[in-house]
Image (cartoon, rainbow, N blue to C red; front, side, top):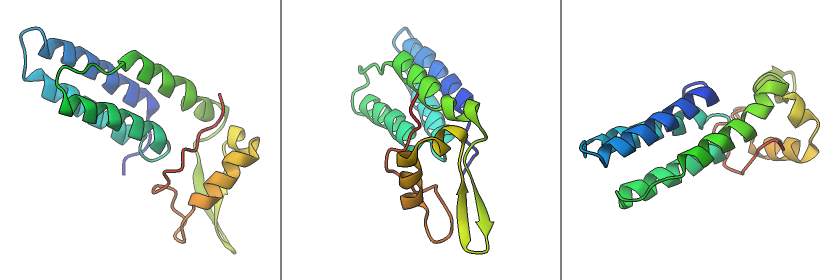
Length: 142
């Protein structure tokens, strides 16, 4: 799985918006580029922000079912910018450390200040110390 990059996800969503408009103004095959950029945005978010990745995926799936559907790309980009980057700006991205008692989560500053987020993270930590399969809606308050 690729490292999380929220700036890259936002860039891909901007490109998806542009190529979707191109698909409706003389370049119909550009809808494939738009859906591809949305999938890239999902992949950029999947590791640390699975809820946001799923949100982008849901919009992409709506577009796949209805080529006339227009996702609110600006709302998606603003949501990612406001909700994801706050954690990155307040501390290092989340990581896993191994102690003598097993895997331990190293919290970002905003996670360390929010016990509910900590409890959610611990519930997602599997036996191998992985958080990548967590889908519980974890996010730091903005």
